[in-house]
Amino acid sequence: MEVPPGIKYLARALPVALLPCALAFASLLRVDLPLGARILLSLLANPLSLFVSDWYQQFHEARHASSRGAELIPVVRDSRPFGLGTLAKLRESFRSGYPGDFIEGWREEYGHTFMTKIFFDRVITTTEPGHVKAILATDFDNFWKGPQEAQMSQSLLGYGIFNTDDELWKFHRSITRPFFSRERISDFDIFNHHSLAALELLKTRLANGYAVDFQDLVSRFTLDSATSYLFGKSIDSMSAGLPYPFSSPLADSGAFVNHPSTTYVRSFVQSQLMTLERAALQKRWPLFEFWKDRIKPHRKVVDEFIEPILNEALEKKRRRKETAANGKTVEESGEEETFLSHLVEATDNKEIIRDSIFNILIAGRDTTAATLTFAIYMLAEHPEILAKLRAEITEVIGSSRMPTYEDFRHMKYLRAFLNETLRLYPPVPFDSRASKQATVFNATRPGEKTLFVPAKTRVRYSVFVMHRRTDLWGPDALQFDPDRFLDERVRKYLTPNPFIFLPFNGGPRICLGQQFAYHEASFFLVRLLQSFTNISLAPDAQPEESKPPESWKMRPGTQANEKIQLGLHLTMYSKGGLWVRMDRLAPETNSEIA
Image (tube, rainbow, N blue to C red):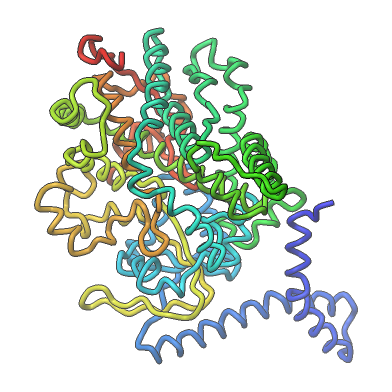
């Protein structure tokens, strides 16, 4: 029987926590006090020791910082004890706020880099590109995911590439890299097959007079494409069809709600949401899931869904070994090597294989689906950009031909449009690393201070906020304008400081699938705009609880103009989906894909 998370945590934490109490009780044995008073004073020894330890740590770090010509990172003040006010603000922001709104208020008071303390645990937050560059690149060896992050995400990510360091991370990286070479990601047949299937669903639903949840559509498209590409076999999530608007009597259709792929996707998303909730609690999350790990059942559903594909790959390997052991020649199957077949050959550890699959699926499905979702959101909000994008597609590719790798090299506006989408709506708006040894963040501008980073301290960084800073991107940073990636603003802002734009992270852990994602998103957009025009939001189909509250209209920046609520799990998404309508182009203009 598995030990509950809370019991495990207490087993680790209580011996350390009770030691000051035991020492205090022993010292009071010779004092003439009632037993109750001795117990009370002994129990107070633990919080007192924490305060003393925290004070001494600050004193020691101040001296260490001074010796290195640095200053301590400013700590956010909290009117409630033990950082409970900070904790409440973080949890509220992650659940129902605007991404990064908890940063904005503190950033105005403390600058681009500050520290929060919850139950004496410290987390540094930064939106300074120079510091992010140190974390991801120049001081890479001193920043890692770390054991605390790994333990917190273990239920979801296991020992996959996003939750490991050092040799195991290098193993995952070496296994994955060959499958994102230019030769492999330039074969668009998989994209074409699944994009045409998605467009058929879209055409049928719109023809029946319903709005479409575009986020659900592209999430299924990217999932099916990813499984085809990585495993050689799609899980065919599009066979479930599409959800109906909440007002439709078909909204709760059992055929859709209970479809295996819908169950899979539901668990896929829920497990990520729960992992995000743990982030605010850090190492004390087991106390809030005391008797049961809430994520594991969802991860089990996901594993069971792809288990047949994994077992088939393992059985093929077993048969090949058996044939070779009998001295017989192993016949070539003629099947192209896939990520799964390559992984199965590299290890017999089924747990590592499962974790590798799941981690890559998160990257393959969620990030590109998020990019396409917010791309369509922006096209609905900016019809003039849609017209300009369609003009480029028509000029380079035409109204029906399948795009090629060479086509995309000539489609500068399409790439600029995707970059601008990734700038204002990055799929991964927050990430973090932990320092191994004490280090410093060097001043990035004249007059700024060098900041001291203590050892074993988590550092959170937000590309969402960094991508919207007017001092980094210019006075029009909050405007959606793809031309900023084509005109003089590139040379003025991005070229001299490339770490202001990090939708795919940077340094040695930069996303291996970056070009794959660009190609997949570009391909789908081309096929979509060869078939449809006049994209518009469908507020009548958007669930009421997912619409921005009236209070958002009084908020600064883009928040005041949002038509949807931005949600967070491991990636960013549109709460309640992104419900849209669009007009189908005349059949004669796209006869080959009609």
